[in-house]
Image 1 (cartoon, rainbow, N blue to C red):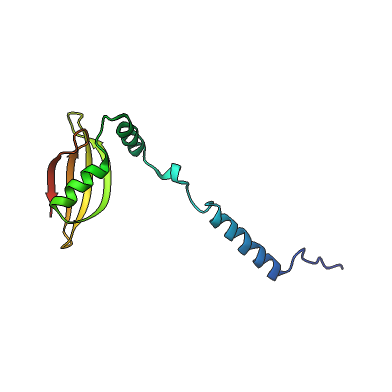
Image 2 (cartoon, rainbow, N blue to C red; image 1 turned 135 degrees about the vertical axis):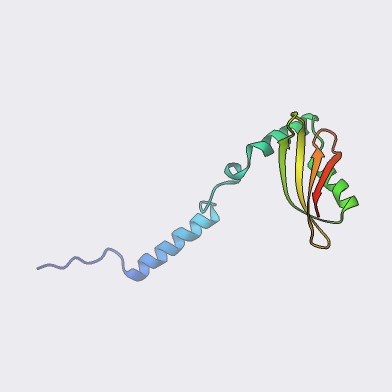
Length: 116
């Protein structure tokens, strides 16, 4: 009865697996690419800012920071029921309260402040 010998040793197989994992991590194969994780609303907003029909988000964030010191947690782009484009900005104040600002995306004006 003949015995089949493994093609590679267990140590060589482990080394090969580690190398393949490292290559996958370095090339970004471990997860979705940036293009895949972006939301379509981000692309629409970015295009509209470039065209000049929307205020840059940086302008809105500066206005919020001037009136409410803190940091941006999240931002969404959406529309009101009447179709007005808005930025919905989740903000943490310097005293750890969470506030959601609704800003007119065309003008950059803060329309509403919720929470906090």
